[in-house]
Image 1 (spheres, rainbow, N blue to C red):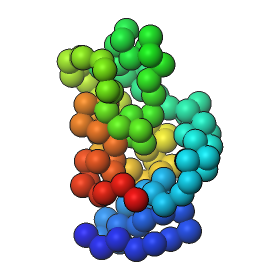
Image 2 (tube, rainbow, N blue to C red; image 1 turned 135 degrees about the horizontal axis):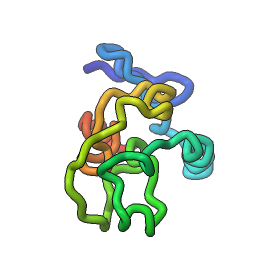
Image 3 (tube, rainbow, N blue to C red; image 1 turned 45 degrees about the vertical axis):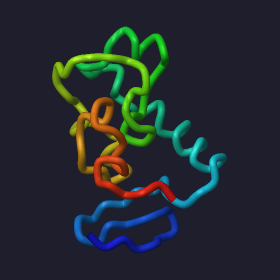
Image 4 (cartoon, one colour; image 1 turned 90 degrees about the vertical axis):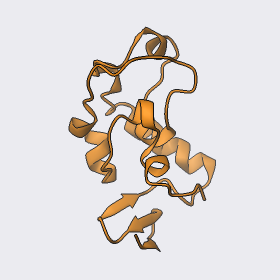
Length: 109
């Protein structure tokens, strides 16, 4: 896997992966999260449960796995998520396995 810098973050040139939340300040990161929140489909996932809903947890693909909610796998709709497509993500079950960055073993910058 080769990582190169681009305007938005890191790009894995071996798989076309573009993780745009890498090297930027917290304000910019928060802005991207706010933009994508309305497009997130986590709440419609069969694995999404009452605990996640009570804590308003979303965007596991960017933020990472649920820090406090216990749950069981009941299916995954990550492959159909417009956020995943927009950001060029390739993994699934982010609520359980962690963000795209975590699952790929890419260190936080």
